[in-house]
Length: 398
Ligand SMILES: Cc1cc2nc3c(=O)[nH]c(=O)nc-3n(C[C@H](O)[C@H](O)[C@H](O)COP(=O)(O)OP(=O)(O)OC[C@H]3O[C@@H](n4cnc5c(N)ncnc54)[C@H](O)[C@@H]3O)c2cc1C
Image 1 (cartoon, rainbow, N blue to C red):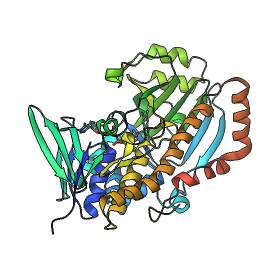
Image 2: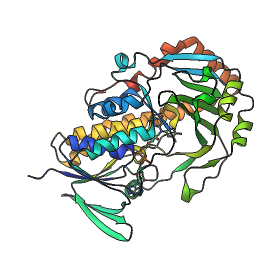
Image 3: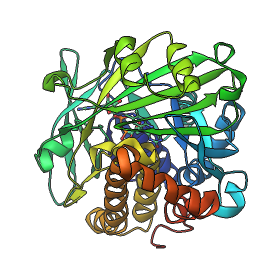
Image 4: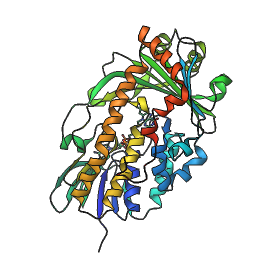
């Protein structure tokens, strides 16, 4: 009997991981990617233990580790004077949560995933191939693909929409609006030798200021620093091209002019900025319909305040493959996937929104937040992430 066959739309982190997870579960996979060339936008990615555990099972963590860095701690600093509000130790991540906490360059993760895909005979990957339509019935799916001037059709046992924030598959299943959140993310990479030594520590640093925060961490053996500044901003993104653009450093200089000098020095060392409008979408009522399932940003776009978008896409992939490997029919497996994943991803989406409010407080509310962080201390603050980072042995485990 020939193995079951999955068609996947989108070869981002979510699509590549799900192709690998399904192939390891014995499925044949056809992966279609709209872009002509696969390239990751932005530089850094925090990979929390819940995601690293899935990558480890796939053998991808092994490929990635030589290029990854395990930060010793997350340091939270006050914007106006740089005072440390909390230091959350990460050095026993493996013992505490069951897998390491890493920071990686997105291009390194993508390369590790693509290498693994290339070594997996059950996966075929086609670029410049956009999914443009689909229909499903009780015995399979038919998927329309546009490749340059050609039109193709692929048939399979299921379709997985891993086609990102502006997912075509999601729009077909449940049309709803993608909203601008009122915040923009500014990303840059700074050569480490242009930054004072104190700002090059092997930590993830999070600065909290009024209506803005700043995150930075070293990448690639500490040779570069990944910098992300997120600001509340009245910005009108072009809805047809809801994507990154060049960011003017003068804007950031003005917005961060009252911040501690070391934060300002880091910002001014950036050679160029790319700016992303941060999109938000209400949590979905469902992740599946018949033989079609959504995954990653297509299913649950989230604000990056918990650094969980890619991690949740990777978790989705692991769970999807595990339920499909149980040998039930596809629709029952997809219902099981939704039952396991929907409560968790909805919680992560909501907590990310809540974190957005807390991080950007100003005035007396910020004073109280800072006092509470100091009173709680790093260890207690870290315990608040145990539910998120702890590795689950099986998908059904709460
Ligand atoms: C500032 C910022 C910082 C972040 N930091 C972190 C972090 O530290 N940790 C973390 O876990 N997450 C982080 N995230 C979130 C993370 O980047 C995303 O959640 C993740 O990349 C989503 O992966 P995906 O595969 O679901 O979607 P995408 O990466 O968007 O991939 C979708 C793919 O589908 C393709 N596609 C689209 N339409 C079609 C079609 N019709 N047919 C075929 N292909 C199609 C696209 O070209 C794309 O390649 C951050 C996000 C931002 C904005």
